[in-house]
Length: 120
Image (cartoon, rainbow, N blue to C red; front, side, top):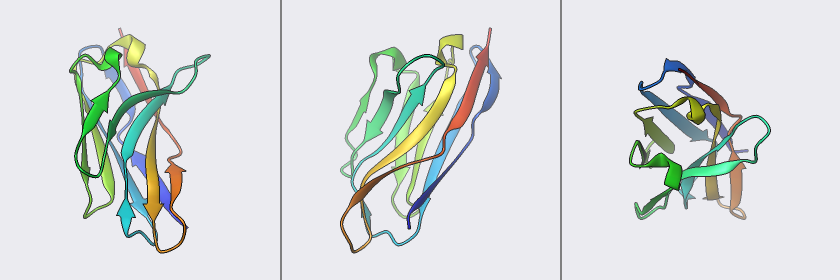
């Protein structure tokens, strides 16, 4: 069974920075894409950033060059460097890993979520 564990969330002042990380454990050979999503209270979960196994990245418009997503395949880990944080970035951040293959049928997995709170 594959498990995703996130870390790095917390409370930060506006303009500050945080680094989120998410590591997958279990029987894993390959992971297609990795991404970060977020969900604020009363809102739907939305994509923040995504990186493919070839290193192609895409970001939500609201990121505005403030965040950087990266991955370390040797560690089955995805990172999200967040700079110039704004109060509207406050949300629970979830990592997602697509088509995780460990010898059986590939499957998608979600982390448990980590709270990011930005104070004004």
